[in-house]
Amino acid sequence: MSDWFVVNLAEAQAFRHADFGSGVIFEGADGGFEQLGVNVRWLEPGQPASMYHAEAAQEAYLVLHGEATLIVDDTERALRAWDFVHLPPGTAHVLVGAGEGPCAVLMVGARLGEEQGLRFPVSMAAARYGASVEAETTDRAEAYAGKPSGFEPRQPFWPPSE
Image 1: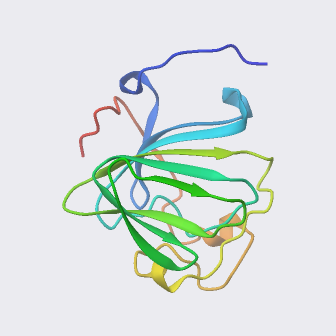
Image 2: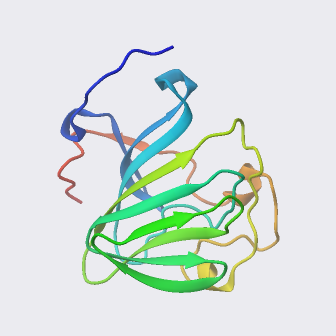
Image 3: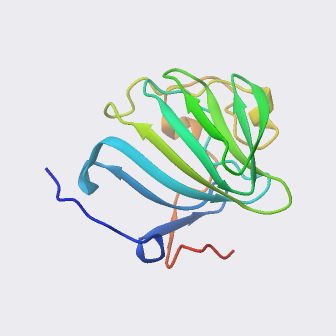
């Protein structure tokens, strides 16, 4: 069992990805997050947070700043600051930055284990943002093939500056 901690995002290890924005991730057994994943993401307009996907665990998003587009079940929905999104298990989705400037989003999800129930369905709506696979798969490596492979470490993160 891990010890409790407090960290300011300005002091946390952050990342930048050419296709999937910037952020701080608290996730994985190594960091003491066996049951919960917590991400704070910074997305530019038109930039997806991930590939369109569904997983066996529930997730939730809270838009903290700016605007975003939620693609859920292949349908687009505009979001603004303070909109809260609940995604039940098995719901196909992706979040994309929108509006005139960047958005900040708090993302929280239950973690059930290694890639349990993860699938990447085809989505015409997500494809407009480069966030859909061409053929459905359950293989993460296949879904992200052709995308830059790494997250570039960056610090400090908050407040973000691109």
